[in-house]
Amino acid sequence: MPRHLEMRLDIGQVNDPNGTPEIGQGSSGSAVLRAQILLARAHFSCAEIDAHFGRVMRGAVAAFQKARGVEPTGVVRAETWRFLNEDSAPALLSATIAPEDVSGPFTSIPEDTLEKAKLSELNYSSALEGIAEKYHSSPKLLTKLNPNVSFDQAGAEILVPNIAAPVPERAAKVVVSKSKRCVIALDKDGRILSYYPASVGSHHDPLPLGG
Image (cartoon, rainbow, N blue to C red; front, side):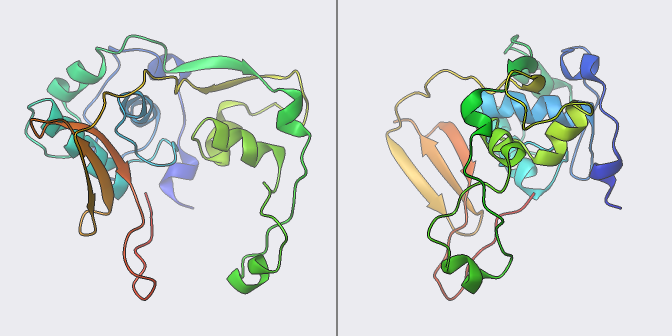
């Protein structure tokens, strides 16, 4: 079983700016989850928030470091944590499952692309999948954060990543990088304002998005 599915999450540590050990690619758990949420709020996206430090997160960390004048190692150490923790809002908070979250329609989505093309619309496959998308999270992460919750029950209280963020500064330039598989927004002085992973390339040579 992959390590990031076996991990244990300490909710207190996720919300604790002092519980921040060094983390890098291959790490997983509470500190990684905190870093992913803080990066997302700073507009440096790791794609799906899943508490696992993969390739995409390494790129987001390196871009964040470069924007803050830190050596872009892609490893989160004390100096990078200091900048991340300037955002003092809780990383996790409680939310209520709304009626529209569970109303559907939900559709069983086939794995085969040709079969998918036959569907009249691509709905979420479950309330959990839709709620996870709402909070930029993996369904497995939400299940781990809320082990005793039925996600198809409106009114249920759940613990979710706090992804609320201010509107980013207006960009002077947007760069799409095929080699780095990302979209970067820059200000007029060339400083990185935001970073988002992307699948880029021709239809003959698609570049998959991954963690």
